[in-house]
Length: 328
Ligand SMILES: *Cc1c(COP(=O)(O)O)cnc(C)c1O
Image (cartoon, rainbow, N blue to C red; front, side, top):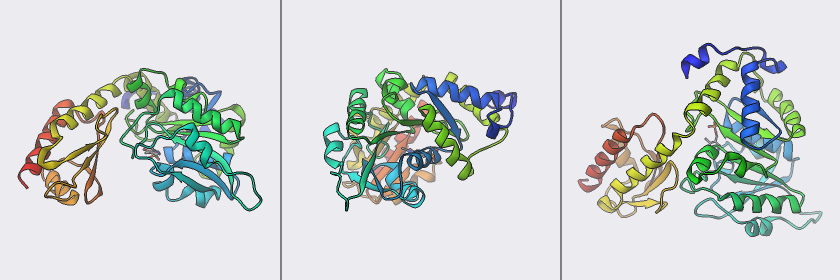
């Protein structure tokens, strides 16, 4: 990847003159079944720009209550676009077209205006669960029927497509805006690519400038994205296998539970409710062995597998965790 970055042809990205960025944008637009795309410094900026384009102040975004846009982006949609969220309670981060339809407000002059339905593929805090493509199409259809925009936070859309044996376009083509993160499972240093119609991307360019996301010789970074799509995409299946391996090795040890019961992608959660140690204690003990797991709450830890953790390392980490849980 570094070699590909070093010899990338570059130009002024702000002027649309960086050939490597243009190639990445074109590639991602096609992969997502969209007209055009826009390279941005982060996935967070992809979400925020999409909401800025879709919403006016006071508008409402329908979303799963455990979504990243709701809980992990510094209240950006409220602070920047002036929109508020209408959260739907879910365990796995997925909701149906009927759930979305029920959350759309009837037009009244004192009600917020429902403006966007936002989905997250895969659902991060839903345990990396995968929205079936048909369910995504159904939710997008509900949005369209009510005159709302449909947005997809596709931070792990590549994982979802690989896990379900479908194309990313099968998931994203029904959406008015959708993006992928280059710096998660694909393993790039930075970046996300936001896709949509020609008119949507034209408007997104305006916000990209305003937020300071317009760049110059960004082709060095875009080259990492092109490399990742060529070399790090199919191998996401290994991360999913490794997450399942980890779950299999630790389930039940010292009373630990696994969520979801069937791990489908690269994310799983540990439930320590029935364990002697709490999450902070477990994390501290693991750190002594150079292993880092996320602490979500005193009884919940998050495990994410990725291309820098081999199957052998995953097995070592799992066996160490079992030792700690069984001998607190
Ligand atoms: C990581 C993540 C983001 C934000 O992406 P960054 O590139 O870290 O800004 C948004 N949504 C989800 C679901 C994520 O996991």
